[in-house]
Length: 120
Image (cartoon, rainbow, N blue to C red; front, side, top):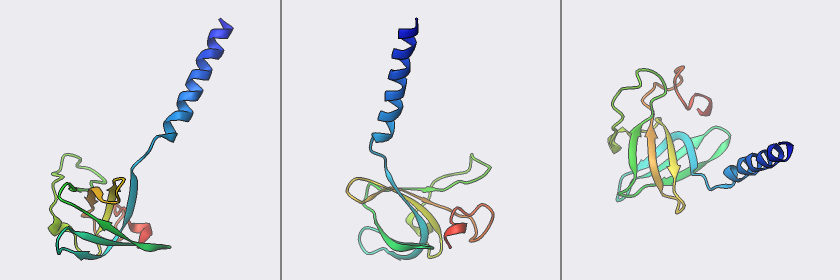
């Protein structure tokens, strides 16, 4: 019984170590400093205390509303017209440094629900 328990503990421990080693998507969160809509959309993101980052998109990039509080059932569809200067966005990047998903917050800057409140 004790050997089985030790063996099971080792398996669980190894599984717990192996999971974090898997590749995870890179996330960039920041405030839009500029948008270039010529060709594929390119975003310039700023965040307090770090350098500006450039986010490239392509035709496969999905745009979603970044819902941070209730009502959860609100429509999540967003178009590139929502990408205005000063908006808070989260970009989930692919391996080739092109955004797979761009989540756009519609919360007012500095509000309690603003995901970039500490980045402004």
